Length: 435
Ligand code: HSE
Image 1: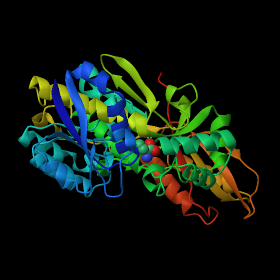
Image 2 (image 1 turned 180 degrees about the vertical axis):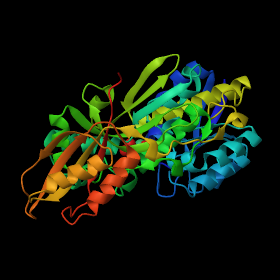
Image 3 (image 1 turned 30 degrees about the horizontal axis):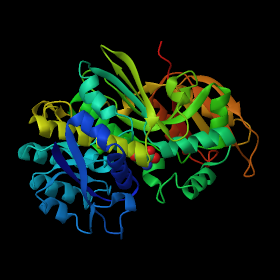
């Protein structure tokens, strides 16, 4: 039986999970590939000793030892971040190694450089674990949905923010408190900025859009808003009106241009994505042939992410064995068919909105606010004013009919400039049910 040797860089959560999946599934994998997939070396700068179940696996402190080892076929990068991960991957490719990575930040920002280098060297780069953890969404776009034009992508792809919003909804606890608890339990990273500010979600949207549309989408193309301004009062409003607040990655394909946005969204409770709870991910595609498809599962974690990493190793092992390297293009489209991104300007977006305006509790305030919205062509659907706060202000919650983003931005700039409105208005877009 042919042996495929694997080297892993990084023995943290995902690295040790991948090693464990390879160990536990050795026979299963050889039944599926006809190869013995063997973890040969782990490179890690902090691990002093590998756990006893990995007896026989070499431990190195130097990633370069993997590139220099002629026996290693596949280098798995699991350290995350841009550098030194980018350099390691490019060096592995230059040494003729196939690469597997879970690195969404790197693939979304330096993917083209990496895929071009890999194509020149005729090696493969697998990145299934970069989006949706254990959910096989990358393979679905490349293969299962290949017969479709993708008309829309909508997803909850950050488990940390979904967990936080869920806890706020269930227990009515403020954002900062839930975040602290999530960090203490190890759910959220010590620096949760990328998760709660929507950046991690945007990294994943860039990857999905590039593969769905054959466009070279950049992080800067995505309009990004996170969840830090959401308060229990917004969640209460959402509940009363039949919504849940979710951090969504959204892209609608308008044919000659595509939307690219990440923001908290009021999702009707009847929508499937409203019911994705806890640390789970849900990714919905609409294809012109297949219709609606929803992927659901654990978007992070040691074994689910390890499962996705090993799926890429299996693909590569099969292709090595059959001499069919790069049979499936990394980004689904042939490299020469990937064109520049044509992104819908945010100002052109149209949807209903929810605003929480912080206003002084005095006569004439509501008419001033309504006047500004009316002047900008924004029609109010309902208004609720909550009890007076300590500072003598009241939260005024407004739900609008469908409005244009440019009009909303103009109206809110004027409202936030008023002396009677001392705090920035919180704006949440509302997802419309399909008619
Ligand atoms: N920080 C990510 C999350 C991990 O919370 O979903 C998976 O990419």
